[in-house]
Length: 407
Image 1 (tube, rainbow, N blue to C red):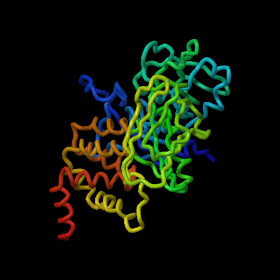
Image 2: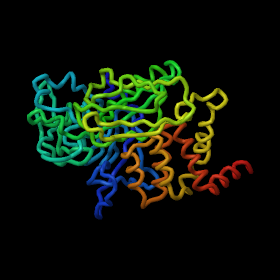
Image 3: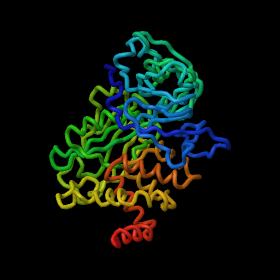
């Protein structure tokens, strides 16, 4: 019996991409730089929902929206992948010389079917790019390969052979503390804790770490507090202090940015208050020079536990999307305000925004990508889509709801 390689990635989505024929648009480079996400040859299908064993149906470039992993394939192929463990694979001696710079992946595919693999990394590119290498683990042995291309959020390896692959960055004379890192701040409300208790995490922008935190917090029935997570470029080994209003008890008051295995407990700051009647402003500063690296406002509604009578509120947006999906795909117009709203609440990251916007020359295809995005994110995202349409295109919403009532 064949073992399922990727049980934790069920429902992953792959987006096909076709190479650009014109100049770069100059938008956020988090999207693969040498490809632009486009529709398939059939214009009404652009997104594939696949099980852990991803069946890629044709030649092209694909990227997994859950992990950031990308593939360029020359023909139809089945690709299997899951997260690997740096802690189990990278030896102590190698850790002295190399810094983990992204997730480790265990990948399987038929030989000579994948032209290139795009591996995500979290290093802010600067200086000598020759320090970037791809670790290839096979039978307990590590070899290093030089990337074919290096982009802002991915490195590309052409003609790969598969087992375990991940991005490493060479430490030069202990200069790891001078390598800028793409980082994220995540906030959760711990519903089982006393009064209002928030957990604030500071991590490298690594999909596997976000997933590990989400799984851990879910065990405690915690609620994500959607806030813009991106920080300024930060540095491993540096300490960052969090401050807020006087009523807020912060323990501890700072975190050190570091890479911890997804299997390990991720460090967090606990923010506690007995009640919350007004918004609080949170700052994060570098303890060394006082530089502001991140800030946000947390409002009472962000942490409010829905009353039983209001728990069905998101179902209104979910029901609207489900009932009028066909018309929304055909009739939605300008979607930038919707994307901005989803981004602001943390329901969409920059990669996902680029995937939608890259299809803007085909409105129906772009609408389809947006609808699939909010469906994948759940009831809260569909409610935000509904509320945004009520504000930006009230006549469309009114027409759809009235047409339903007239039946």
